Length: 210
Image 1 (cartoon, rainbow, N blue to C red):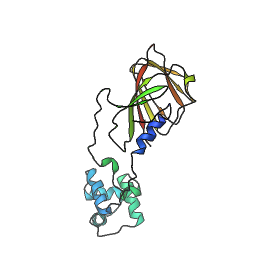
Image 2: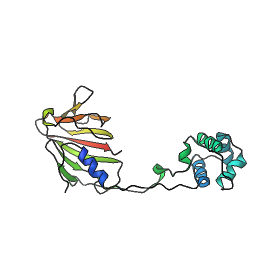
Image 3: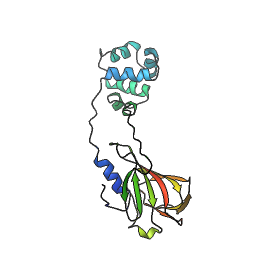
Image 4: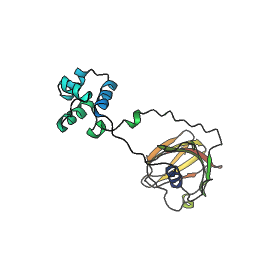
């Protein structure tokens, strides 16, 4: 059971991050990496060499580990492949498929109740997520029910599922939102959401974990 430590999503983000572990990215073989990048673009050696402004034989030697390129050659390779020099030596994280998946049945998410919201954390079984999705029942009826602005790292997406809410933000006028309306905003900007329906409204929130 999650301890109710605040009345905002910040505690949920801390909970999600607490399960993560630091990972060390191991350097990759330069020749293999260059060949991988070239083939991903469906370029021949000749085409890649022309893009990078290198001789075909030079590129071939680099790919086969027969030559250690100078920094000038590395810069040409990076420009030709439209990446940065450091990316030549690190694996493409987004290109690695890990096949992760989590299904949360309706009403079976991890509950986290506060004075202003009742959160249901979705995909709770996955660790090291890049996003934190959760459904929230909006209990608050006035902005005065909050202890100041809610703010935290990352960006946030809000989608109204039922009812009518009013989104308060630090730098904008309040916005009234109905079912099907959505908002995307910088979560470091102060924000609060209240229900202006006769019943508690429900919203879907997705927060980036960065």
